[in-house]
Amino acid sequence: LLSVQLSYAKLSIIPQKVPSSLNLQTVPRGGGWGAKAKVATVASSSPSKSTAKQQSSSAITEGLKNTLASGLAAACSKTILAPFDTLKTVQQHVSGGKSLGLLEATRQVVSRPGGILNLYAGLGVAALGSMPSVGLYFGVYSYCKKTIGETLQTTFGSMRGDTEHPAVCSDRTLQTLTIIASAAIGNTVASFSRVPYEVVKQSLQTGQYSSTLQAASTMWRDGGMRSFFPLGGVSIQMVRDIPYAIFTLLSYEFIKENWVLKRTEEDPSKRWFFDMVAGATAGGIGSYLTNPMDVIKTRLQTTGGSSKYGGSIVKCAAVVLEEGGPTAFLRGSVPRLMHKIPANGCFFVFYEFFRRALHVE
Image (cartoon, rainbow, N blue to C red; front, side, top):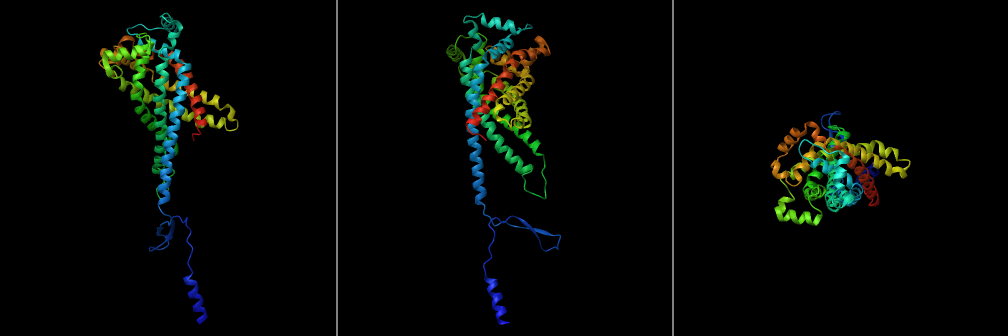
């Protein structure tokens, strides 16, 4: 009997090894077999804090890489397709009940001193101006998409980690909401940096000035900073660009996920072609749906438009409607589509190329 007691005593003092990765478990307690209580994990909270810091750092790094990739892609696409943007602006700048056809707009542009080179009017300011604005837009969009997406997934989606309360929304719905919110935030931030170069570019395209230096110096002398931020200029920029970004990026992300990645999984060498088709299609959808806002933006941001309409988007829209009816809001839609469809195709080809070159996830 004594030896049995000694053996039991030895066994009871042997330290029991507890697994360091012990997770939450449910065990019977108190109220019978049906009642369950949660046993706390032994793991410390420091790894979770470290993981959070790593995720935040990853989101910032990815955002910066997307800023660089999109800025370079914007400069490439702007250079290739500048003539269509010029013709679109000339068509939309015409006031009154008349409208210019594509060929007539082309003849008007090339008849100015400088000839065919006028089709590239404002290219310098457009390319250099688009790099920081587009870079800022896609950088913020990428950062928000990563952080907002993870937050929504862990709060409302499949990553809640709570077996008692299932997901509130499907992951597909949360992904759509993430893209919408990220596009809106990114474009809101970028719109303020985009207005000045848009105003100068459109003044050059409509033939009001012969060079970027002349345009900038004259506008500064005549109206100071207000010339670069006309009344209603920022608000209509946001009214046009935020819906455009939402429509375009929703379309692109959907096409990319459901078509591009599946078709190029076995043969990545053709990825550039599928990126181009996806970008072109998404750009066409976004451009056509937001053309009415683009007509109003052009009217407000070109010289004299701010004072003529008092910076009011509603007043400008009413005047356009009175001049040419509902079809007046489709002015410039053909050259705009001819510009935006290939522009988005080219942009997303270069964008995805630079993303891969920079090893963006």
